[in-house]
Image 1 (cartoon, rainbow, N blue to C red):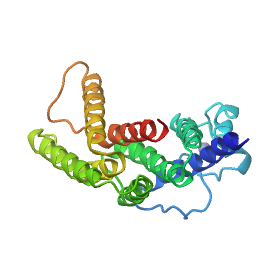
Image 2: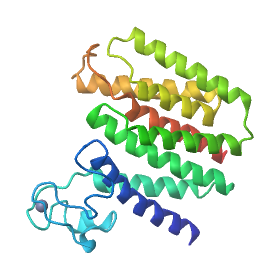
Image 3: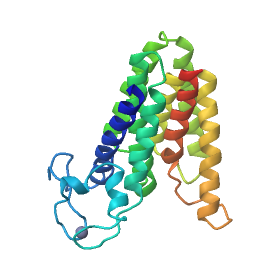
Image 4: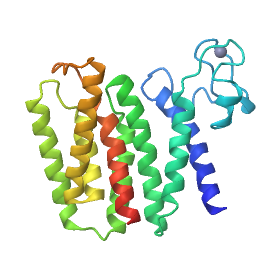
Length: 237
Ligand SMILES: [Zn+2]
């Protein structure tokens, strides 16, 4: 029952994350205004029974009930990913660590989606990632080595960004700092390595087999989930 409740909470929070992913990068929208979700195509307010996390997407077969506009597969995916992550976090015995991991993974999902689409990371998600990171660091007893890991990873990423002409966003550097502080010294480098490899694979696939050096890569899209996975392994074992 406890695990199911965590999964359910994750799905509900995931539904809110979808709102954040859509609204944060769009300046004319805020998280509270308009209060209800509307279809971006026809503007009709979405009824509560069409707004049930995960389920509604499948009941509506991925289309708006009013105008038939396709609903992005991102909506149910974000809800399912967040629900599964909360479920995984509920296996962590330390409650504060478990809570902080939920905060971290929700930020990671928002960062991942927004960076992919807009090549930018909203400040509020970085601030909350740092809050989560400091809490995680606290549960691990404020290990000094983690500060070194954070600083080293930030410097390395900054240096990589200088070397690679596509450039590294400031947001990515702030984010690896939070991950380093939470995860530890060696772990920071595992995260950097895993996210670099996946970002390069993404760039090659997108460039149809060629690595275009000038293209901008949404590095946060890979950094944030890699950070969460390393932190989860770290917290569970
Ligand atoms: Zn519609």
